[in-house]
Amino acid sequence: MRLGQWLGLLPLLASLYVLWQVRSVVFLFFAAVLFAIALNRLVRRLQKLGANRRAAIALAIALT
Image (cartoon, rainbow, N blue to C red):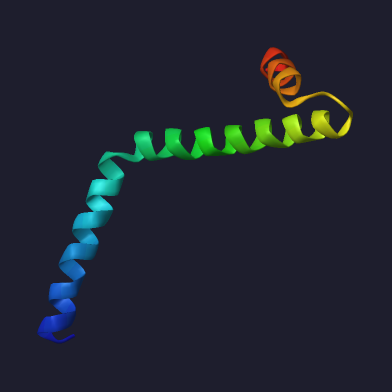
C-alpha cells in the first residue's frame, strides 16, 4: 500500500470507531424509522377501509 492509501485508511478507522461508540443511538434511530414505517402502513390500510386519517392514527396508536 502506498502512503495515500494508508492516509485514507485512517479516516475510515476513525469513523468506524465513532460509529461503534454511538451504536446505541444509531440502533434507536433505525428502530424508530422501522416503527414509523409500520405505523404508516397500518394507517394507510385503515384509511383504505374507510376511516379518516385522524381516526386511523388514533386507532393505530391505540393498537400499539
